[in-house]
Image 1: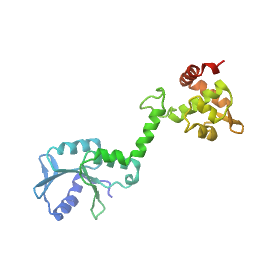
Image 2: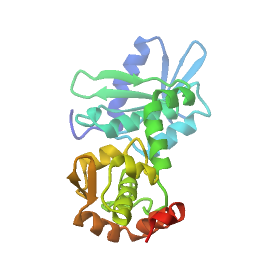
Image 3: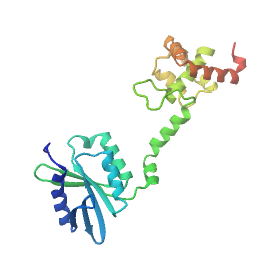
Image 4: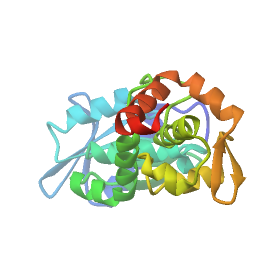
Length: 245
């Protein structure tokens, strides 16, 4: 694909394609790049060298006028297989727009990977049911807000880490014990054993068969996350006052 192309270079390939499909095509009609009519329906196509928020906003405005609206851009060489591209395509579908990709290498090949169809939100949620469940599980596993929205490059508090701190507090307050015993102190029954066994953070050590203790690294973690540590220790003291010295 040449690097010095203009937006108008996209016009002829798309024009020829539409004419072949039986459309009557006109360009630059009331600020619309391409207007095409067929069987009484109006299709508007906006041409740009790159996908952008400005292009999406412009296309969304055209939806007030047309039955179908497409955005047309040169086909990118590397972006297609990336997660970023998938996110862009999802947004285009969400806006109920169509996408035309033009290969400008002499063949002027036209692809239409997305057609403008109504977006079914319920169907989209159902298709991502597993991801939604994981998100809800993560939300339920959070106790207090220790993260800052929009932050980058910082350690984040996760439900897994919170549960690990809960377990660490139990071991710190009551000494080495089994996973079964830790669960009696309120740790999640479905995660406690695997957290102790896998020891992802290095906070625990195996004292003997099925008995785990808190390592020096674990004690450091309790100090590092003192706010959450205080929360869990307070909770344990209220729940099991007779166990506390």
